[in-house]
Image (tube, rainbow, N blue to C red):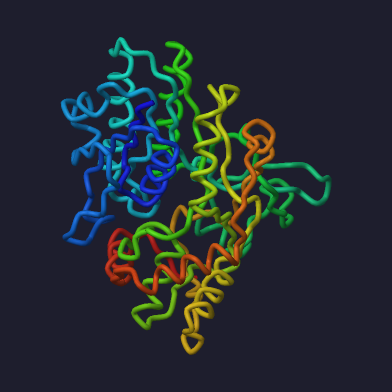
Amino acid sequence: MNILVTGGLGFIGSFVVEKLLERGYAVTIIDNLAPQVHRSSHQPLTPANVKLLIGDIRDRGMMEQALTGVDVVIHCAAAVGVAQSLYQPYHYIDVNVAGTALLLELLLQRKQKLHKLILLSSMTEYGEGLYLRPSDDSLIRIEIRDSHHIQKHGWEPVCPYTGELITPVPIPEDAELLGKNIYALSKRYQEELTLSLAQLYAIPAVCLRLFNVYGPRQSLSNPYTGVLAIFLSRLLAEQPPIVFEDGNQTRDFVSVHDVCRAILLALDNPKADGQVFNIGSGEPRRIIECATTLTHLLGKDAIEPLANGEFRKGDIRHCTADIRKAQRVLNYQPQITWYDGLQELVQWAKTASSTDYFAQADAELRQHGLIQKF
């Protein structure tokens, strides 16, 4: 079986490629080596026996070449980063939506039947997570907080009808998609294009909504994505990790190894076709605690993470994956514990190339009026 991995030299894609090669599959990679992600002047190591195309998923000729003889497509390539998408909307829509549309168009034109298409989408599509209203145990959804809400109620979301504090709970795949930042919208459109055309043309397609993926090979020099990697780049530069708000916002972190496992499970399981699955750990982690733990594991206890009391417009407060559907249909179960995953990440980071670009990214956000002080 010949498998195309778009973005196959990237963080997640490179691990996927290794797992596919271990199974004996023929693998084709297309990757544009985007400088923001691949800041080194040297090309990443490419596994032996892989057909490598350095090019863009928006290049029709290159994509036609990449799809030649392919049985499976695992679509990892994307422009990633919520904050940056807010002032680069054309780029994010062009890469994520137009790139996916071209891929789908070329698949429809082929005579060869596709065995599987797996799209990596994002938890950002949800916006805020799911909440429980204590007064009547109702499950409710809320809009993204704004400055008016924070000034009136503080950092934590409240019920828009009763004004009471609400409790975050894991969010399932059938929850309404309320994410409104450009990155979230681009990933949502990717999903909708894929599932719509897949149903119309009987293409076996699966969408995996990834939560906060972490692990070795995540760029330590890209200040727009991967909060754990951003914290590590700060610490390795002897600078304190900067945490927005009060640091008590939570995210669901999932190891890249568990993500790869989920991809292979989706590849093998025909019952997954036409469906969307949350891929996370199912466990919320407070961001300030993440920063503190990394500081300790890296042996930088003299450096104290800083919660700056500032709000990044568009940021959510809480979102955790309900993974029961993936457990039931895919037999997916996270296997990498939080502590083991962080230990692996830290040990890798000690020897990896790292440059702290946080100040540059922070200045760009402020220039566009995307950070507010409270």
